[in-house]
Amino acid sequence: MRLEHYEILYILPMSYTAEEVKPITKKVAELIKTNGGTITKEQDLDKQKFAYPIKGQSHGYYFLYEFNLTTDKLIGLNRALQLTNEVLRFIIVKKQVKTEEQLKQEAKIQEKIAAKREKEKTEEAKEEKVSKEKAKPKISLEDLDKKLDEILGDTKEML
View (cartoon, rainbow, N blue to C red):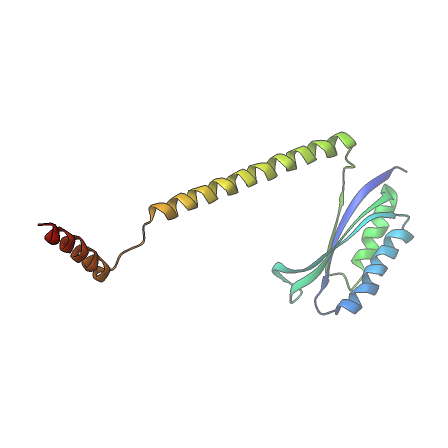
């Protein structure tokens, strides 16, 4: 059978504490390994709020694994995860392994996006500075009267 690269995102309910979550994540990793998979990447995506309640829960712990597995073993892994009561939801997708060239291309795109955002920030800062300079502080009537008295007083003394 052909070895494919997959990604699994699964959610554990917030009813578990951080200490209780660790053995469950190990259990999911073991399910992947017992089905003949090798995990290439593990990522804890931390606690997040759901878009809608799932089984009475509104928050959960998100975990992401990337792994290699033969296509015939995927059905067994999927079935084992369905029978795991601790996992609230999961999704397994086939992931394309990117070549060096694709990774370099993505890095260039990310650099361009970052440069564009930085340029926009500097332009916004300049516009904000200009708008602050244009917005002159308001002078109170009392200060205006004092200034007028000073000016008129100076002109009376000249005459």
